[in-house]
Image (cartoon, rainbow, N blue to C red; front, side, top):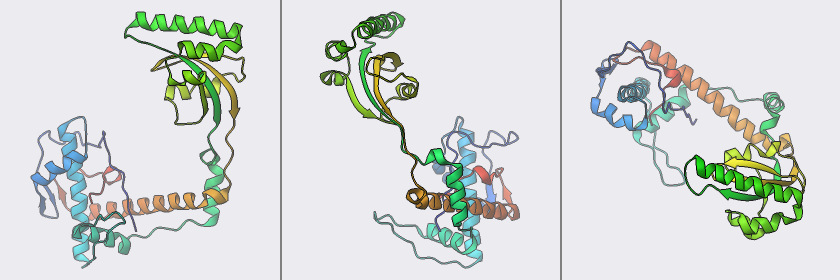
Length: 285
């Protein structure tokens, strides 16, 4: 069983009553060395050093809890290696074996898979495609004056192509600051993730047609855009995504079961020096 617990990156749950000075952290009387916590903090970026320290301490407390439980149950496991030559440490192997032995989660049935698919249809379709051409008027200097100058230049070109759409390609070759100018501004077919967000978010809102033009502002400047064609995404059949859904639901169930198990261990343990919040604490491996 593979267990992945999400790590809190920038924000950790912190008890406001905890002193700004790190305290000695113990688990059932076993002290977590300060040096180990200090090394672990690099994996827990936070706004304040004390928050990184506390997040690291929680992670190491959970590791110690699991290792103590594996020792109590006399669990022994041989380290495994993956296809890239990475090998578990002895402690990682024992923690994995502990979860495999003590934590079980339900396997999603066919009805659950079908229900998830029906309730999340938008997640299972191909992205819309757009056949787009543009003329990019870049902002060549910083500051409001340069920005306004680029905007006015783009608006002037927009008026030209609106008056004579056939001029678009030649105007792109003459004025565009994008390498696509050599192709008359043609970007071909683009879909989600292939352009900058501020450009992509505008595509569904733009008019479609070879004589329809709009100005879109992005981090690169102003784009005179024409959308030749919009090809709507199509739904993927359940059979195509069934295995993906099954894997997601199985891993989600495993993560929930692992959280419950960790909460149980923490509730029965004597932990000093840090306030535990298992729901947002990663497992160190």
